[in-house]
Amino acid sequence: MSAKPTFSEEIVAKVAHLARLELKPADLPPYHEGLSRILAWIEQMAAIDTQGIEPMAHPFDLAQPLREDKVTEADPEGKQQRKFQALAPAIAAGLYLVPKVIE
Amino acid sequence: MWETIIGLEVHAQLATKSKIFSGASTAYGALPNTQACAIDLGMPGVLPVLNKDVVLMAIKFGLGVGSQIAKRSIFARKNYFYPDLPKGYQISQYEFPIVIGGSLDIALEEGNMKRIGITRAHLEEDAGKSLHEDFKGMTGIDLNRAGTPLLEIVSEPDMRSAKEAVAYLKTLHALLRYLEICDGNMQEGSFRCDANVSVRKKGQEKFGTRAEIKNVNSFRFVERAINYEVERQIAVISAGGTIVQETRLYDAEKNETRSMRAKEEANDYRYFPDPDLLPLMVDEQTIESVRKTLPELPQEKHQRFITDYQLTAYDATVLVSSREMADYFEEVVTLSQASPKLVANWITVELASSLNKFNLSIMESPIKTDRLSDLLKRIHDNTVSGKIAKEIFGLLWEGTEAVDVLIEQKGLKQITDDAAIIALIDQVIHQFPEQLAEYRSGKDRLFAFFVGQVMKVCAGKANPARVNILLKERLGEK
Image 1 (cartoon, rainbow over the protein chains, first blue to last red):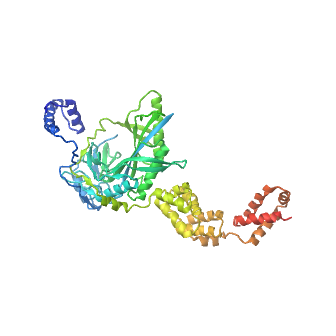
Image 2: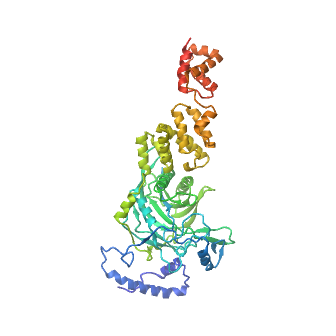
Image 3: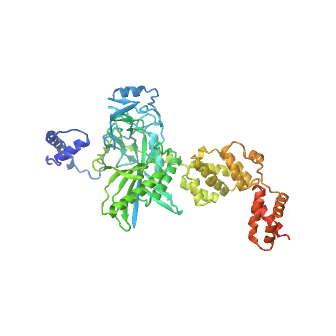
């Protein structure tokens, strides 16, 4: 397995942008190198023959438990709401306020 | 020369009490953020737990359209940033949806049926709502809707006109309501539609590049939006341009679609299996228990109405358009003992047009099944003529009196007594000696004139069939 990066610095920049991480151009090379090493490590698995093996969706070999359709989080007096809203930088009329977004 | 290709994605809100992954209420219209719990807000350390009814409803839908129900389906994270999506990802299903394949038969205008393929249907959570007004340059976020269960139903690109698209949507809408898995309320966003539209030259095999029209929330607007988009694409291509794959928003006021965002980076959702959720396993026993709860489906009911009641395909289509309408019809048939055809006529013509006029649903009809049945009984036993019955229908719509009381009060009882009808005829004959002479000298078409005059003097109350017979006899006597 080669440890050579299989992707460019542009891809690092793109992934950072998609994750809304602000990377300065000077930050790119070290991130590129670090990510390359992680990928190279993962690529070791490519040596294993996985033909005919169904990929797992979760490390635990269990099925999703289901809950009954019941309202268990009723908050008629807004007690929970006030707790949550106390954490927000800006609120008005029960709404969370964020910088204007227009599509 | 051009062919339109349409595929539809419908987001149907599942009619549960609580959310897909949390115990917060899904009731519509609550004060902002009073139905958004820690899970819906994406607080650290919380875990989503799947609502059982959401799974059962998805299975019910799949069985209703003849799909394969996946024994194992996987929830995935669809990653994007928007303020009304607190976690930074939407939990959805991607590679392994719960419902695979299936089809829906739609009735075309000419009375033919067309089968529309269903690609898949998958479960996902809804996002919150952004309110752009009134907050001085800020956007307000209400997360009550965040985490509401949705079933996204994806069709094959099988529709060839806006009309077919609307027929598909109406059929699907009715089916979801029959199955009682979605209330279908379009104003409240319980049934939302995105349309993928492209055009190609007739005979061309490859599909053209498509544009996606987002969130058109009435049947009428879907039709208009698609027609506008088709014209636009043809104009662009005819002028030598090319269509860009993009999302467009329909503006109902201006009747146009506008580019929303180019789908390059925005479309890079980096799906991956959600580590917070295990694979959803559905066993045969669960599928069979859901199958037992399936009601008679619209298509089956349609066929039964034609066979059992001898209705036309058109009448049957109108009557089965909602379960409530079909139930109303069957109740009136039973109560009134009148012919199903007569009942169908009264419901699809008189009742439907009055409901339309006042924008009411059949459940809100001021005339309930018992009163319409009473009226039809009186037509059936010849107490009143069809014409007078329409007058009584108007009175029933506005008031609360019983049918028999109205007939009595207003003196609307039909005149069936031959002697009384003959007296009316004689009165008319006396009044029009010239016309009588002309008729007797061979001017047959004056017969209609005499019928009209007799009906006029009795204010429409004489039995028309008897009037015809007796008048013919009387006029024929020299």
